[in-house]
Amino acid sequence: MFHAFDNPGPNRETGRADWMALLARAPLPLLEQALQPHQVGRRTEWLRRPETGLYMVQGRAGGTGERFNLGEVTVTRCALRSVAPDAEPSPVGVAYVMGRQHRQAELAALADALLQQSAHRETLEQTLLQPVRQHLALQTSRRQAQVQSTKVDFFTVAREAGGGDNEEDEA
Amino acid sequence: MKQEDLQKVVPGFDEPVTGSQAVFRRALQALSMPGRAVDVPAVAQRPVMGRGAAALLLLALLDSDCTLWLSASLRESDAQAWLRFHTGCRCVDDPAQARFLWLAAGDAWPSLSAMNTGSDEYPDQSATCVMEVASLQGGPAWQMSGPGIDGSGSLCTDGLPADFDAQWLANHAAFPRGVDVFLATGTQLLGLPRSTRLLRNDTVEA
Image 1 (spheres, rainbow over the protein chains, first blue to last red):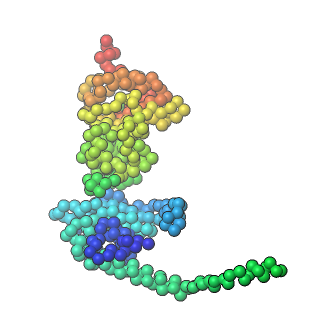
Image 2: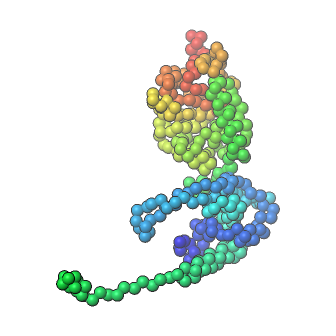
């Protein structure tokens, strides 16, 4: 899941789609901590207040089959501008976050708005995006370790040619 | 929606629930008492293009099942992006396909007969047309009668097309089919449901 986003590769800049995918999965405490200094003195202008709804998730068997409806997932979305007292308002920040946490969607949208401004990008890359990547990598490796303990290796013994069939014929 | 369009979008209703209810109530009032101008409260921020009352009415009425046709000056404006962002409506190129039409002053307007008038079985599926006019006080006078009007009423408005009386006559004659019209200024709405009879005053005297 999200392989292309999580492994940016060398010399590839984090694009908007990349950081939105990261922010959508960022845990709330991490967001709160990293964005706290950026909220001082700033006001939020809501285009769309956080609202929770359902999205139908579709899948393809093996990634290539016909599309089928996998199930519904709860998503909270919002859109906002961050307004500083004596500066141009920020670009519109948008967030779609799984779950029902309005605060998480709000902070993810704020981070998206700030990341679109070059003045904030460098800092946030260090204080927010990098920790989120680490968190997700840790989560993945933990899960892999957990699943690893139940791993079963299947193997098949090659049949000896002709053996079984002959016995049946004789019986 | 394109990235640049989103950057132009301004907020919608300050309080989505009470705001849209307040505007909806005014729309009901306008249609139930045709010819009476109704003040629309300023409960939302509005785009630069288009008149305020028209924008608020459409913001309250539209949803993602609606099709919308916009006249030329609105089509590429922030009003279009604003409505699409907040309501999820779909914009169409053909006026006959639209359930709602927003006609800005100064643009070329399609005639009422070119709009969707519904069918005899489903007259409720006809279009609702919002026309921007310069004023609801001055201008040529019309005499009106019909349901919701005690005896006869009068309407003074500026900015309707020259052949509007003929268009309206045909629209009224097609009852139960027909288009319902709202006239909108910056702050006021006036309803003209298809059941209303309209006559230009100079034709009455002649």
